[in-house]
Image 1 (spheres, rainbow, N blue to C red):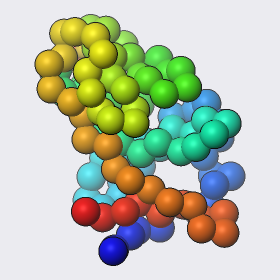
Image 2 (cartoon, rainbow, N blue to C red):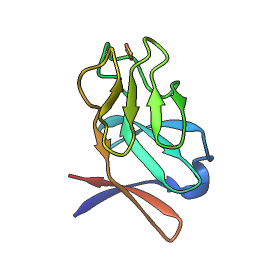
Image 3 (cartoon, rainbow, N blue to C red):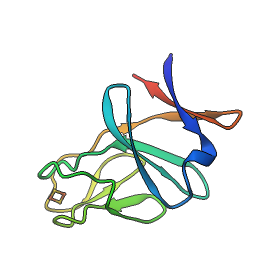
Length: 102
Ligand code: FES
């Protein structure tokens, strides 16, 4: 299993979306009290970034037209998007965050 280091856990403030480039992709890192989500920074509707979306514990709503996604699965929870977003697995080892490369 390959992985890429993306930063220390404290580099990602809780309940703030952070845009990064890793594994050759534009990715959002979103940390909650329980875990960190890592996913593609592109809405599947008209490809605007998701970093400025509205977040709750496990969803993001794109501010451009209102599509909503489950951050665990990438599934669409609200139109107008019809395709899921790519979710990247991550792991935290001794305070360091890694994205798992498929
Ligand atoms: S670009 Fe995100 S809902 Fe349209």
